[in-house]
Length: 130
Image 1 (cartoon, one colour):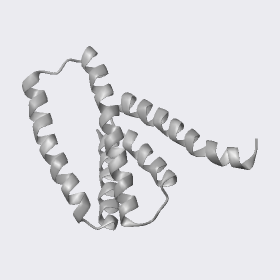
Image 2: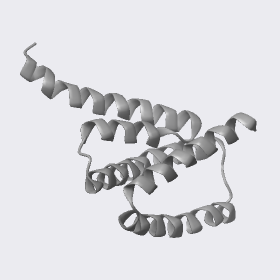
Image 3: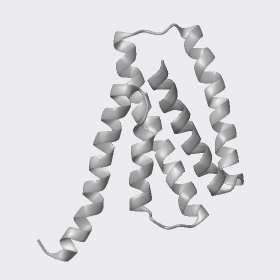
Image 4: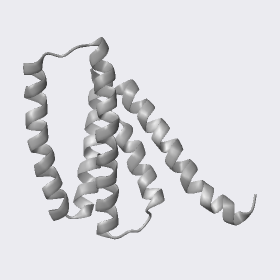
């Protein structure tokens, strides 16, 4: 294989591999796929500017929406959730998503990275302790 073909193949393999792993982790654990996708996006779009970082976050969120929808539909086949409970989760979640997307464009990307890192640490510690 030539160097040129290898350079074209590597991003595609990273994309497909990250997608498979993210989907598997998201389906298995119900969370975590976004961490894998964000890591992949950092390597696929290595630009260091604020716009590139925000693009990576936005692309990851868009992909996770689809992965989470598939996971939710699959889970609901085995573990149905009542409509009032679902509404209490989804409606505030939509409002929070809109507000968070608005803030993503306003906040410093260093702060966004810090918040994301803290959230991962808190979630990990919480999962281990419970």
